[in-house]
Length: 357
Image 1 (cartoon, rainbow, N blue to C red):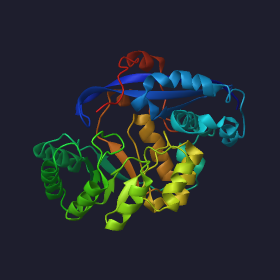
Image 2: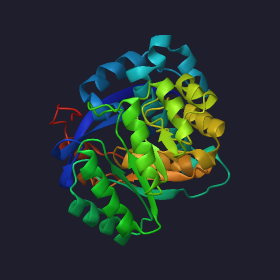
Image 3: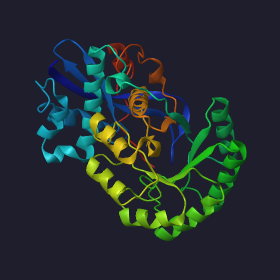
Image 4: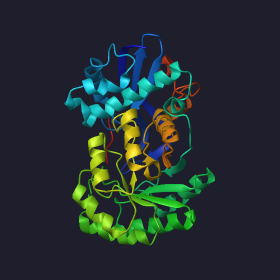
């Protein structure tokens, strides 16, 4: 199999219901798609997390990366070594992640096996956790949200804090814990994207508060690059999660060596690709890993197959339901994805406004 074309583009999918993001309401979401075409006619599909933030940059970035991919065959693991260092981090690495998903999707299609089986001879299903609980939700909305996810069979729930007042957030947490009972409650402080950053004093105060709610973890209580603060807060006895924004092993190495988190959250659509993701999971051990997902069915499937192959503990399931997910063909080998020309036309990129608060 030889690569003869790589394509990157954006699609816009309506949400099935109005969805409250961290600081605004939305009726649609952009999705960054990668296609890798091979000389035998097989097309592999991937998704890049860059679609959430900078959809308009995907196409030119893929055109840049394509020059290092055309003609590659057999040993696809070394492709990244041929890319200049500037392409091995940041936005380009996030987009390369989608490319590598597409390559391995095609390889497993060629072998006529599911993606996880191409990677491993054994499979272990991860625990699924429902990810919603907008930071803008009122207490009554949190109550309904928890009831909804329990009705769907979830036993773990993640909610966001850090936008409303401390008093309001505590009230919301009390409601979540009440209706969850003994089920897992994860809390995301969204400090990677929230402009209202916590200082160290505030983070320590929240660590003490959250002990009373028996939270499974506190996620992203600082911006991902605030390593010293991360290390300091580990001393306050509350489980810490993070890592969704990291996208090369060097960054994950820092988190591992300095023991900055109890649970690491790689996302195969952002963390450097399939091989890099597996290395990260092996470094932290599967029981300490929760796959991050905030994309379409492609992202869900790709992260799920990685989780199954590696025996990862948790997989995030976004409660933002995208209309496009119902139309993406989910039959067959690979990650189980096929995007037809009809889908591309139906969900042609309409909204160039990216993530905002």
